[in-house]
Length: 274
Image (cartoon, rainbow, N blue to C red; front, top):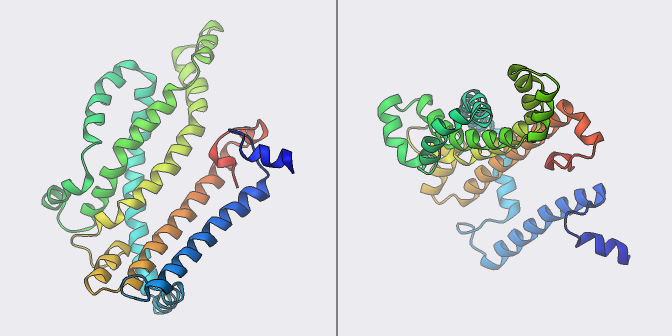
C-alpha cells in the first residue's frame, strides 16, 4: 500500500491501466452527481434541469430524428473546416519546421493572425461567402488553421538534430534526410496535433452556427436559449461533447495503428493512455 500511494504522487510515474480507466469513469460520475445535486438544490428547471429531465428530452429528440439531423449538419461543417485547414496547414507546417527561410516568411504573419478572434471575421465571411455553408466552414477553418500550422511546425522542428547530422555523415542527400528522417520522425507528433486541433474545431461550431443557420447543434443551442429551454441547451452541449470524445478516441485508434512501434518502445504520447 505505501508503494502504491507513493507512485500516485510521483511526477511522471506510470500507473496501472485499470486504475487510469476507472479514475476517468469516476470523474464523469463525480460531475454527474454534482450536477444532480445542484439541480435538486436550485429546484428551477429553467436555471439548471435535472439529468433525468435532460435525458428525457434528449431521447425524445433522438426518437423524432431531430437530434440526428442537427448532429449530421454539425459533423459535416466541423469535418469540412478541419479537413480544409489540415490539407493546407500540415504541409505548410512541415515546410516551416524544415526550412528556416519558410519559417522566417510565414511565422510572423501566422503568429499575428492567430490572435484575431474568428468571431470578429463573421461579418466579413458573410460578405465574402454569403450565409451558406461556406461561411460556417470558413469560421471553423479560421479558428483551426493558424494554430494547427504553428503546432505542426514545432513538431517538425523538434526532430533531433543529431539524427539529421548522422544522416548527412552517412552520405544522405537533403531530399533523403527530409523523406527518411524528418518526415517519419514528425508524423506521430503531427497525428497528435490533428487530434488536438480537431477538438478545437468543435469549439468553434456554435460560433459558426450563430448566424444564418437553420440546423446544427449550435443553432439548436441558440434557439433553445431564446425560449429559455435550458434542457435543450444541455442536450446540445452534451452531444457536442460526446461527438468530440468519439472523434478523440478514433484519432487514438489511428495513432496506434500507424505507430505500433512507439507502444512497443514505451512511447510517452498521451495516445498510449486508455
